[in-house]
Structures are given as C-alpha cells and as structure tokens.
Length: 170
Image (cartoon, rainbow, N blue to C red; front, side, top):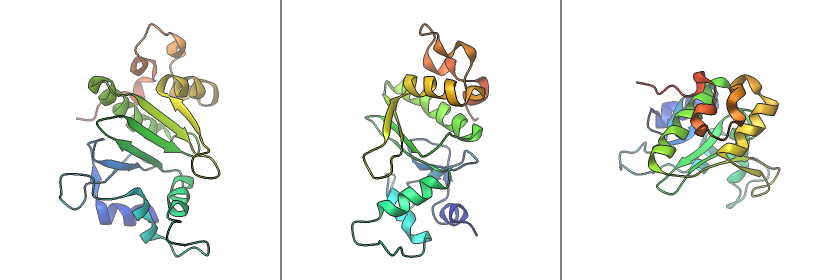
C-alpha cells in the first residue's frame, strides 16, 4: 500500500477545499477534518506516521516528511477564511490543476487571495506566486494547462485556465 493510499484510508477524501489538506496526483483531496470535529483536526505534519523514521528526525523535524510527501508529487494545501494556499515541488498534473482551478473559483467567490509556493530546499525558501503569476509561470512551462488567452488581463483569472481545469465537480 502506498503512502497516499494509507493516508486516504486513515483520513478519507473530501470534495470540500475548505476541509482538504493535500491534493494527490490524481486530483483527489485528502480530508483534514477526519475526526469529526467540524474543524481541521489533521496537521500536514501528521503525514509522518506513514514513513519510517528518518535518521535526521528530531522533535522539530516533521517538515522532513511534509517535504518528502510533496516531493512524491502531492500538493500541500490550506483553504481558510484568510486565503487559499498551495505548496508543490514541480508542475501539477492535469488532475491536480483541475482541483486547484476549482479552489481558485471558490476563493474568488469568497474574495480570498490565492498563494502558490514552489517549495525550496529548506522551509521558507520557496518561490511564492500569486494566482496570476503562477498562470504566467505555467504558460511558459506547461502551456497545455493554460489557454492562449491566459495573458489577457481583462479576463478573470479562472477564465484563463484551460477548460479542463475549471469545471466544478457536481
């Protein structure tokens, strides 16, 4: 069983971005409200329970496991009343981009800013993007995910995404 499968088995999946803490490579959202409290009760660092202990492990080193999970192609996310945040190490898969697109739409409707961080080698050293900056980044490195009109500043940013990335799940 993969680490992703064990996390899904333990915490379950959600369709609600406000409840999610991870976007898997297949676009599924891992539930961060897994214990029924109605609030986030799973911390991103709890992913450590699915890894063998690291030689570098100490009480403050859970970021090692978060980084390992992100390096497996998963996206760390937080969607709160203040912002929608995503952290990744490479380009998103089309399924992840669709999930992010749904979150962008929700964030826009709620009037929330979106921040996307491309993870650095050590915590806090990544490159931080706004939604619009990240769309420009993708237009350069993953043009198949972005419409040619992506650079049209007159369009709302969710209309700049490829149509496969903006459809709401019903």
